[in-house]
Image (cartoon, rainbow, N blue to C red; front, side, top):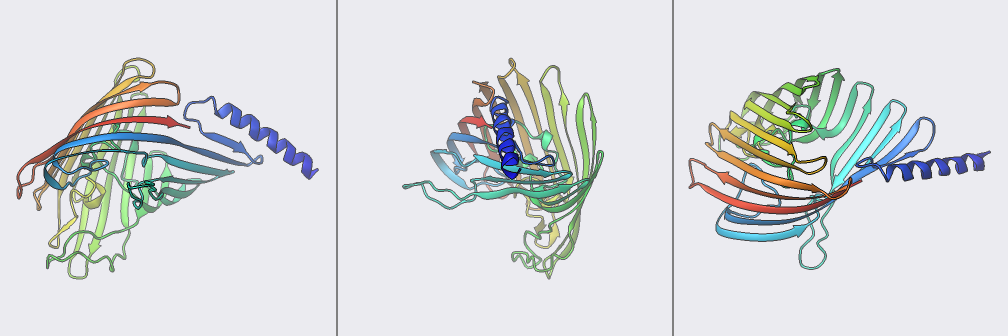
Length: 356
């Protein structure tokens, strides 16, 4: 009886794998029992990137950069490649995903970059617990870019541990706290008193027209000699613009700290919680069923450290098959801070991506 059951499971797995192999982005789904399935997915991505200007090379732009006069650099890597596994048992789902931006390795011989956890969470009914995108973030409002995440300085962009409740369009969560910045003495802020989780609420309105989310975050930061409470807001969404085209946007304000701009603002600046204003916009146009382009722009302004960081880009993706596409993107990253001269760098990036 056991042997017969194993043989039937083997046949079922073979059929599912064969079917999945012909479906774009479907991954590989294996039926283990009537209640249990396991799925494997992800993509392989190779990038060739050239950066030239007065800001030093980075694999992808964030809300900060290193001024470096007349610098230029070219690199080829596959660090964005990622793998994920989803295990479903009835109403329970567990998900884990890794990529290779974990540092380490070298470019002398082996280029052996370390994997890192992107997502690792368990979901049951209306509850989620583990590490994934912050509830404050509307992932559908991210532009499609060749650069890893596009204009991150204008985005909510954060993955962390959390406990989340979802009921229809409403999401509420408590999330991992992290005091960051400088205290009233100008020293790095301590995290030893992070005893209160961040509190986030978001509501998403959805329809045939697309979606818009409205969110708020409340953070208490305590660095022993600096004790502050910050509150910030976010409005983000994706609006359909005829056919498969769409418009994506994000607007953020208040004391959003580390949640917005990817280190553009430190949160605490000499013991005072800094306000920042950030936004991003993107338009994606399909030239045919698979080929498409996006043009995007993002910016952030901080009110105490007086930083202004921005990025724009335009790209073109060519769909060679249902699973394979190549893309090329040109853009510019700019730093316009009060304390320093304006600097910028141009970049051109070519990618090949195979999803499974």
